[in-house]
Length: 166
Length: 227
Image 1 (tube, each protein chain N blue to C red):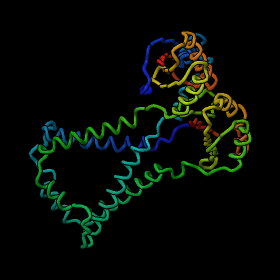
Image 2 (image 1 turned 180 degrees about the horizontal axis):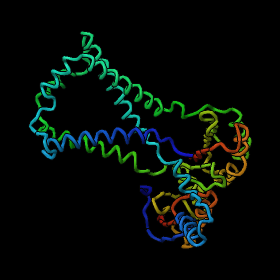
Image 3 (image 1 turned 120 degrees about the vertical axis):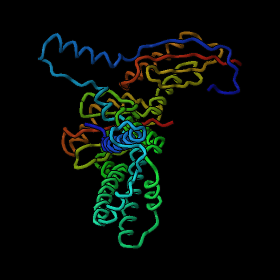
Image 4 (image 1 turned 90 degrees about the vertical axis):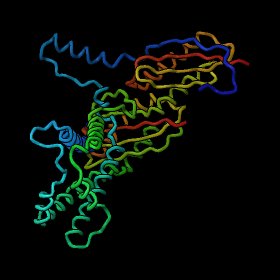
């Protein structure tokens, strides 16, 4: 079981690109690259002329930007929780509440199934007077296993978030 | 911060209770066992490492900012280029100004922007590579497929509640530090030193009960209030 790594991959790719771009510009500006003059323009006239003479090149640029925009839009949706929060499981939540019926003042109890029952996310909030150790022990030994069997089988990875309120 | 209107007559009294074995111990023992007994033992991942892998921060805020910026920038740039090719520039992005700037400036004039770009790139790479502190404190579980985490605020509250249950303790405050858990108890003027031990034991018992895979030492500080 692993944490969602999409953000780290995206940040690494964008960071590496920026590093390469900035490093190239700095080295070029400091005359560290042999054969490339630091006094040359960033966009030489002849390059601009060549691009202007071939409009299909700009269509290709626009297409590439569109594809990249779609990729980054998908990344944005994933960042905002699309496909990662999962669907609330009524049965799982009910089993959780029944299993912890001895705990007074339990709130925000939820069991969510993420993906195609690939992972289970459970969260609950206890009062500070509750014996959190007993709650965790019950979750570990009994309740999570029961919910997993109900949702799919014992091989479902489960992440439980326990909070204690004032 | 201490409660404002109360005078502190004495500050001090510090006790340390070892509540949990250091998480590193398990790793070392496993490695030694492997070395001594050859290749017969399959390497087992420690619970702390396993939980940390699941509970470490997903870098959602940074990812959202970068993804939003890139999405907006790329959509706008693509729309600008296409509209310019069709002969009706939208004018949402100053593409012409940027091209003019690039045509006028030499590489030697871009040292500072290049360094800023490098710095941003390095920052992003660090964000991606550094594991970061878990937002949930991992809890020991019997099943490797179950990862339980308790929020840092939640752990503080449950430890504070158990410290305040000790006789004579008026208030308690808990801080979770990287290597220790600091409990400051505020008592009346007639408190005894044995209270330190009681608080330490109570907090240690609760920590052990929860099974939190956190710092190994509980430091209890006693503060007496005047009348």
